[in-house]
Image 1 (cartoon, rainbow, N blue to C red):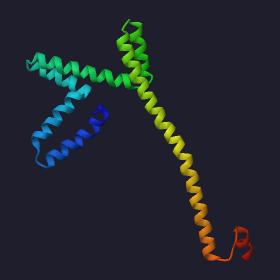
Image 2: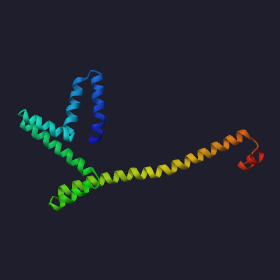
Image 3: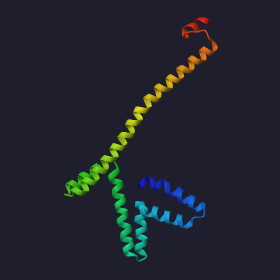
Image 4: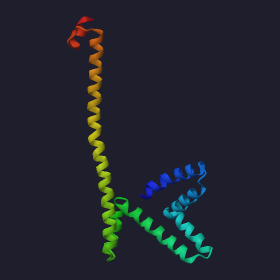
Length: 156
């Protein structure tokens, strides 16, 4: 599941699980949310480390960094700049990953904007057409013998 979707849906899921008495499910969902949220999971890794669980803390820290890396890669311009830094530091794998993720996000945003721009004018034309038809229908109801707006104005 995408991290952004998880951050939005998990609190709702936890609330529903607690409301229905599924406390073990809520506990698992909470653990999953904590592990996947970068800043929270970094803090949790520190607490786990203080409790003496070095390997678990290391794993949690590593997962946190992977998620944070993915988030920064997916931000257009930021991910592209990060990719350039990877290339400059002779890390083509990291550069390719950052560039590909940033390009995918840019394309997705461009697609959404393109869809929005293509729908809005069509919707506007449709609304104007509906309004004109409605107006014509009202005039024809009031003056059934009228052929146009001019006839209606002359009837006044």
